[in-house]
Image (cartoon, rainbow, N blue to C red; front, side, top):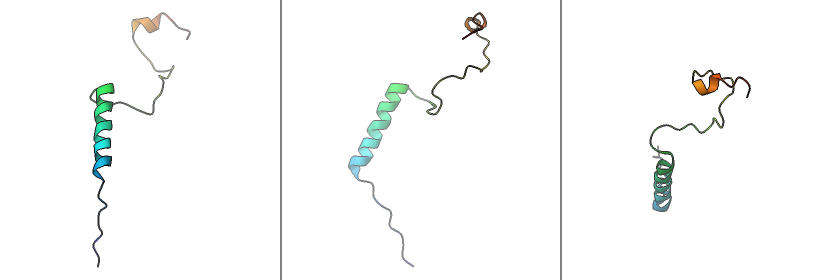
Length: 57
């Protein structure tokens, strides 16, 4: 039985991925950042005082 060879990632591509990740962390900061939710849902309940006065949006 033949062994499967893993494809080696070129060093240029690896360096580009690392640089992209560093730039993204610099822009957004550390931690988790959602990418799928583009805007806040209007129906989400909030207790903040600034949202209690304005009932219509």
